[in-house]
Image 1: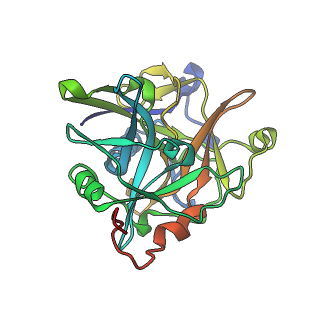
Image 2 (image 1 turned 45 degrees about the horizontal axis):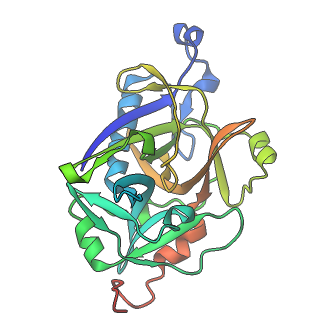
Image 3 (image 1 turned 135 degrees about the horizontal axis):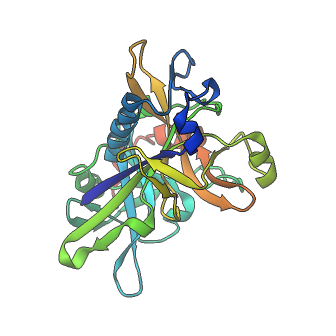
Length: 298
């Protein structure tokens, strides 16, 4: 599968570009808030692109077949493994389709497995742990990497800094033509900031289970510095929400941790992406059940 990448960040006004970025617009990336970086710092931008390229190795385009038997982009998933089992983490409404397909190289396969039980049924929770079978694991391992527990951050309080990444596959820019042996999936990396309290209150969001991130207007492409509209985010459901963290005291030495899964988009009074916290399903991800790999015979 040919994956092209478009990297975006929140844009600032022309007036702001002409003067020094004020301190309140500087970016603190460490969970300990011990280091600051400016949004227009070229080294910082390159590091964000590098992190996006790392995340995309564990991010998968989920497809369905329409009435014409053509493959269509449907959502996104994050690949995860514990010691014994392999999962696709996504939004529950993405997995509502009985048959999901994924590509590895220029091959496409229907995903086999079962949905893990025990996820809360709260109206604010829209998560799915899809425990994939061994043939699917072997197929996906040819083109992807599975993250494990060290990449999770289970207890994160939202902070008003531009240190969050949403990585996924918007449906409108994914060109799929399996009959001609061509599968193009354009992943986008969105560098976003958490929404303020009034957004949570307006939409009745639960801070205990949900994150909200501002998602409106134009953004700037980190690669070419051009401004462009965000566009329709359909297909981002199931995308990972990652926080950029500082590994140590070395400048620009970053890593990422998965803190949530994106589930919906609101475009009323406030435009925002909404996701669920990953800790909601941490028990399901680590529960091996003593069965090892899931197989269709079990």
